[in-house]
Length: 296
Image (cartoon, rainbow, N blue to C red; front, side):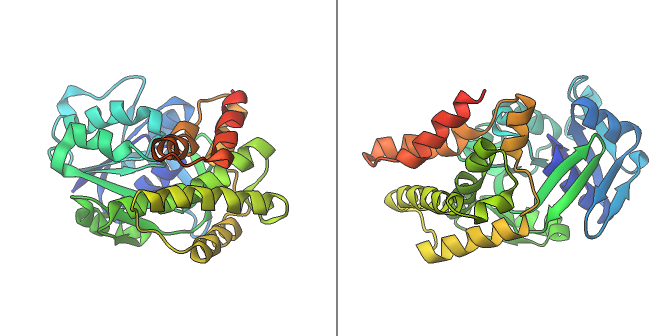
């Protein structure tokens, strides 16, 4: 079975590597120096366990070159792992590559809606708390192992495909997305603004601010009727993720350092906009949204 991984940065590269090891025929779509190294030399994954993928073990398509017309409808499944700003473009590419299910394994809210506009009932959504950092082009480090949950109309099909990452299925899609969003808003903006690894957020006063930002966003989710955990359970999960990814530089911090566009609009921005529609103030998320935008 052929599976395409579109937008193979750190997380996407790990997913593609694990699929190769599991025996899948993998098409990787990437860009820049990292994409070039995946095509020329393959991939090295540091962590537990360490593994390496030879360039002959997969097919690499470079974003700068584009997808060859001969690849139309050649994939059985597609997984999108890009930043949210690329969702529309890669959803269109996914519909070119397959008539089968397409999974959005991305941060933030709104990606599933974009995907459904392009692949309709074949859409699925997933979230992961696995922490992966790109060390250099062609080399990533699996900093912290986490969970991977899939859902949506075709989510069940990806539970099997991603069993190599211990994927599980959850029927309630909104809950999946919001529970991951709560972790993202609590960790990513604050770590990016302060320029610190995730583990530093376990210290005061950063921990209290991180927790308060999460609970503020959780109250918006509940007001929207989304089923999420109680506050004490959410905070326990936050502490667990901060501990397991303590040495990780979150993707937003990496983007800020590189001068790239961040995903803040799909994270805190979504909390703020939904709060406004409900008439519920979200000052903490609003402050982080403004501060990250000011860093550009």
